[in-house]
Length: 592
View (cartoon, rainbow, N blue to C red):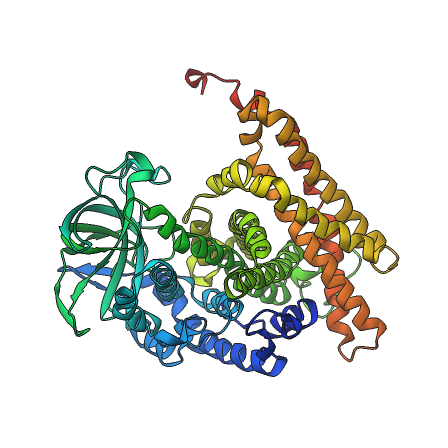
């Protein structure tokens, strides 16, 4: 069975050597010194390694059950949830007014990586609760906040988001769930929702559903959608739980992965619901939760690559297969370990270079979220808005591919369930689909985000890259291996954006057919930007006689691999983009 080790050393490197978080002016960051973050994440690592990871395989095998209307989670989940609650891990970055610890979002994001790496299905219960908490915190009335948030911060009550219906997913304007007014912002909610992660379970006293529905007589399409708080149990005025609401589980979905999470069909039959935010403005309120969820899903893409890589690396060192073509490395044994072979090294380096670059990118984005939310930094808010579809789309695409690479290293043993590595492939696959399928992320990026603020935001990203290159062009340690590849890739991205501006206006399909390629191109440039900055940090550390030279030399070698072997993909993506829509759209429907 695969184990998991929290990458505390690399997390510390990203936070303090790369991002220098304690020196940033962001509110709350001055308290995040090395000792503090080491203490927080070491404890998170213990919970992940000792409590959550041992339940990952068994949770996958057992799954969740629905019997007589009651949903039960796999053995050990309920006890583990109590440990997570007692440690107040759900409350890390929540508002102290409602029982939270008030730490920056960055801290919660890293804890999310650690817990999700150990057990993705389990971690979704508190992750979705945090998203629902954020939506109520941003859009709820004072009474709603006082009623729901303290118990959600503690995870005594958990939360969900209910969007999708059997006949509509991305196109929410088609939804049919109705909300009949009862007066005083109270409604009766009727309809069915599907694919509801953590829809019901036995680990919390109440489940607080955020449900999209239409109030009769409202505008057509998405302009007529409202958002409602619909608890599993009605909450009395004194905060105690009242009768069961008109909410029930129709079934638990049979899924490819994340079996330990109860993905439910939810039926609402005249359920009591409370308007959250303004009538007919539900999408605005829901996007508070969805944008947070998309960043969380980006972390999931990274998180599944991490334990898959750890398992593959251990297997590659132990498994004896064939001989090194340059000479035996294990002459006393019947064969050499897998890791001597170049193609195995290629797959391991693909994984390692992605994981470390992705971690840096996720943490950088989290600092911008904190700047936006804690200090009202509009520029940071715009930049992270631009990057959100890239983070969600690129990191989940690549994260899935890295789990496949890990599985490939296991060979046939990776395809059978007893080794556990196939679970990472199956679990990672959903991250490319939910919270807006990756094709939708690409369309959002090209159709909306690159034009954000009249194009100023994406130009600001280009300026960040350009400024870094210019400031470091005299650094011989970086120039040929990091700066020149980054500059070339950035030019590919600028050329793609220019193509959209010139050809996309004439023919929108020219832009839309290249949207996914642009998302991937942007992702590669973003990771290369992170790697170039890490290369500067580590080369400086070596020049200054670091006591941990081996770590920094490894970091530089890993970065060089990414720049040489992964970053050239930008050329391919640009070529595809510039080929336009003709070959994509050429066939009539009947010809498929």
